[in-house]
Every structure is written in C-alpha cells, then in structure tokens.
Length: 275
Ligand code: PLP
Image (cartoon, rainbow, N blue to C red; front, side):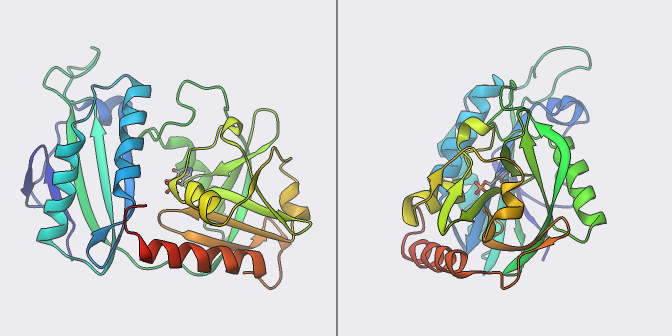
C-alpha cells in the first residue's frame, strides 16, 4: 500500500504531495516529528504524542502547532486507509524560508503520513557507539528532525548485524538508542537512565515506568555487559529484548523480567488506546 498523506490541511495523492525545496525543515532540519503506532486502524497514545510534538516545537522555538488540526490530519489518513498495523509519521517544520534567512514566512509545514509496517522481532542485537549524546545540549529531550547523528550510529549498528545503537552521554553514563530508550536488569531489579541522562522522554518508556515499574538510575555504559537482561523500548519496538550487546551475548533473551514487561505492556495497551 502506498503511504496515505495529509499535507497542510488536506489529504493528497502521495505521488504528487510536495514540500518546497526552501522548507526550513529540509534546508536546516528546523522541524519536529512524532511516530505513532497504529493498530486495527487506531492511533495508540495519540494524545501523549501530540503533547510531545508541542513540547518539541516550543523547545525549538517553532510556532505552536494547532493540535486539533494535527489530530484531524491523523484521523483523516486513518479513515482513508485503515491499516491493521502501521505507523503515523507527523512532521512539523518551520515552513518555507528563503535561503540564508531565518524562519518561514508562509507558516509551518504539517505532514501526516500513514504507512503499513510489520511487527519487530522479539529480540535484537545492539551495539554501543563511541559518540556521546549531549545531556546539556540545546536540543536535548526534543524530538527534532535533526537525526543525522542517529543515522550514522544506525549505520554502525547495521555493520555489526545489529538493529540499534546505544549512546552514552558526555560523562559516560548510559543514555538511549538512536530511536529507543533502554532498560537493564541488574540483581533482578529493572533500571532505566533518568531523563537527566539526556535521553528522550519516550512514551513507551513512560508507560513501562507507570505500568511495570523501574528505577531511574544513572548507570555506567558497561552496565550493559553486567546486566542479566537488557531491553529497548519505542513506539516501533514496544518492549524488545536484546540478545547481544556488541560481542557480549545475553543467552535466553527475552528473559523473565523482559517477557513480563512485554506482557504487561501489550495487555494494558490493548485495554486503553490513548493512555
Ligand atoms: N529516543 C529517541 C532518540 C527516539 O527517537 C525515540 C523514538 O523515536 C525514543 C527514544 C523512543 O520514544 P517512543 O517510545 O516515544 O517511541
């Protein structure tokens, strides 16, 4: 199925949907985005995603998005193309801006794209990367379209037959993945890095904290090698066990804590589409 596209207020043909070459999101990455899980034609946790979109836009200094309008865009693409399983990608940029000048002159660009997707495997391999997340950066905690750093790290993961790369921060503490948060089990206790580590306030992370419970703990990067279990969380992965970190294997993944976290997450998510 072709993606279904809603652009600046209306549904449009994906083959002819166009954004200007002068869009500030394209030229300087001046944009924010959300990826929302779609199950049985319904968007999961949409209210939390819209709130985070607004927080990211505010952090970047973009005009406040009209969240009712963005929600309408999501509803329209979902109605036009009900998919059993997929993702909504909401992109909100600074809009058209002549090269060399500041922000858009014609208002922000808003795109909602709906794509079909397949479920991720239960377990995956990850690598650590030598580059640090900046826990004190101007963009820390914002979900911006400036994803170059993540693209490079993910390429490193793929070179090692892994699907995710994990970052430490500038003081060497465990932070997050390119598109996921990370949890580790140490002495039977579930831990995840605090937001002060520089990680994104992942919506799946927040739901695991609320529904399953975990300690927010500053951990050294090498805790990954000492952990009994490791898992990553994201909209596209839910709770995904890690069976290898670099060359260190975690036999039996998903272990009992991870399996229970996934069970609780899926059960609660099925009972409440917009928790
Ligand atoms: N960290 C980063 C850098 C991300 O890009 C994402 C999601 O794309 C996450 C964590 C996980 O967040 P969520 O659970 O809201 O998908």
